Length: 440
Ligand SMILES: Nc1nc2c(c(=O)[nH]1)N[C@H]1C(S)=C(S)[C@@H](COP(=O)(O)O)O[C@H]1N2
Ligand SMILES: [Mo]
Image (cartoon, rainbow, N blue to C red; front, side, top):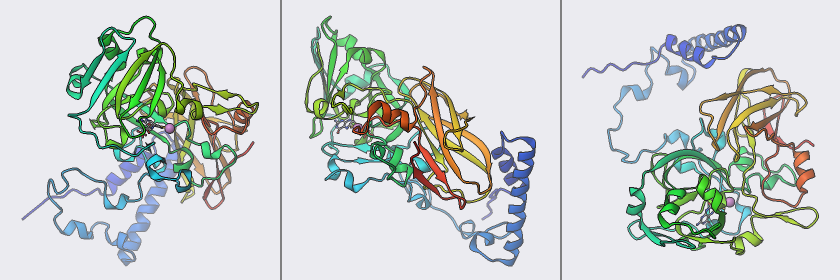
């Protein structure tokens, strides 16, 4: 049996390095490439000595997996990540809530690339666990101040022309554990109540046209079919603007964790308004003052008053490389990377500071820059062991500038647990270790 397997040679590796060094100045590029060369020839030299397993895998030697056949098709009818990626998982903070059925898990932002969160890594928030809903038996009822109340089956809903939109979803409690001080030594825990998917479904506007909202109709109560029957009041203007009733995420049907078979997505708004396992929409003339809204999802201010209906997730950003989970391993060229997002629209600009906000350098926005979606930014620079107080500051298309922690505390006091969108600081030590710090 003869098989031709093409493996990357030095040329391909160099081309790869050249590609990676895109965006560097000529001098930096030369440096970067030279380092690559040294790394390659260094590896080749030790390979001859056969010191480590990895070195023994370099051409012309053959790694073990090149000497045998792999598994065939449909060994995994639904594919899974490599066994070497086992650490890339959702994680929770056990002391946050008494039970896992009313808890929250965070996305591993430190390991994600681009702007899409894979379905198995989208953060989870439940108030009564995940219901197992049979889509054949699931119904969506729309009633209240409407001309024609309707009960939809899933088939009915999927007959409407669909839209697919990339939007982030974030719990307003994201970062909430950090109001009083820095305490979480991981990006996953400081910012991981955040995910971004391509959602497919029907604009709520379309369904409202079907039922005919009466002139007095101003608010919508959205209710879930889970044991919590979580419900939220949503103003009609939002519903007519961009609310989606979705049944798919990232190309496949919703995961049970994300609301299978049907959920709301209120782009850019507090995650709690994106009611999962959606079963009822009632049109009324005012908001419903129920438990969730009076005791939760309000921000208690210093003077004892509380902010209510703080729907919008304000402009925010965080650096994902380096971060506590991704310390700097080598001096030399480093790509500072991160994500920025705004519930008000598109990200216009992200600046990076190395000195705790004294001076700022504009980063490059890379890939897609979409309305109410994660936006990736990048800044290629060099690190030679100097200590950094690394920060990112996002500005959105409305001109809103992400506040400093001091500005946010001055405006909101210290009681809040929600809407902590202030500039975040990573301290980079001389050994490349990264810690979570707060500077005023
Ligand atoms: N029916 C129902 N919908 C719900 C919840 C819930 O517990 N029950 N949790 C809400 C909260 S607080 C958030 S932040 C988002 C989280 O969405 P995700 O789990 O898909 O990330 O779902 C919202 N929708
Ligand atoms: Mo939430």
